[in-house]
Length: 88
Image (tube, rainbow, N blue to C red):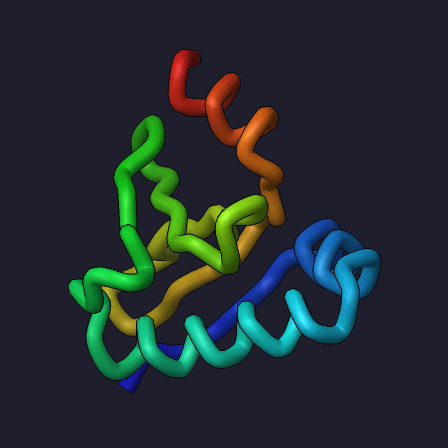
């Protein structure tokens, strides 16, 4: 199964979220690791090599694949930041 990694920045951003949203991330992460295509995750490609999954209606988690065995989360983005990223 996939290895889950996260950057220090992601860790910090995750810690700044409320426990409810943090728990939602881990719930969606488990879902993602078992089924990447699950519709509630709304997985999207941003700009290569980055993708994102939904945390809730306000936040998305941004990640890339360092290799075929692992996934690395880099940022928590609210939807305003996310829209900017998608338009790069």
